Image (cartoon, rainbow, N blue to C red):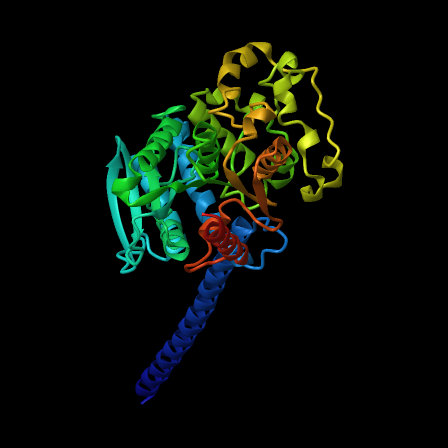
Length: 446
């Protein structure tokens, strides 16, 4: 009996131990789960904070679509970092077939909502062809039956190195339909593989083809306009100079027009706003690609050491001097009365590149005022938070003084690239307004 009782007692102890061990395991498991969940929450919080910090970009005052601006900037900055890494590994400027396609698909998605674009349009006949050896995409409104249709030849932006007619498809479609005109979007060859003057010559060739073959294209040769944004705005200004008597209207949209001075107020005060779209450094790399100039000179050119004292004191400096600045569009008071120092510069570098940077086809501002006098009617579109703002405003001021017919459309809250975003998944009010104003101008004047 004693032995049996003893066994029973031991059995009771075993059962208690099992229950105790089970409770301990449950308690340990609960604590471990809490710890795991806490660690997960902390990691997610840190990642969210890092992402928020990465997306925290300076947005122009007046732009209410703050998160759209952050998404746009983050997407393009991330792609820019990939391109920079490729450049560091020997791919010049990071420019190659695959990065070009990647940038195209990213921007097309941001603009249209799909990486593959908009597809067929029942209101337009759209086709790719070749004009005198230059690739183009043509948009013809199907309800525009006249044999004397107005036409717009468009040169896309992208720093002469990036983007394509595909990225601009939404904008060129909208212009064709809303204005009621034929649009020819030029697929010019790009730098650095094809530096200046090849992109300019391709645009000039395609535009001359439209004018000279107006009858077969069912276009009125007296109603041909040209336009482009950024690098395309530059090409528009250069082609307008070469075809003054053959073009009715020129529309340079936030154009880059000179590599003489990269210390204008707009370069200084705007380089940190939506930097994924454009900064002083990225704009300079585009210039270097286009001009076939070494990246080794980036720091010198950013600091204006690429022009000698002699060149800084020459007539060319007066073409972009602070006398042309429009102070009412400069936000920083200390920049409104800039004085340019002339007693510095690297003469050897200046002598090496000055033939390029003083060429009017390369830098359309590098001509005397008299050359602007008989330009076609010009509609200059500028953005207040763009590093290229002052290039466009100087161009407007100089054309106006020369007696040319010129109109300024300045958007104080505007940013580089805004003309893309007039529709689609992330429209900006300033982009909508800019596109509406451009459409009305062309309807009235073309």
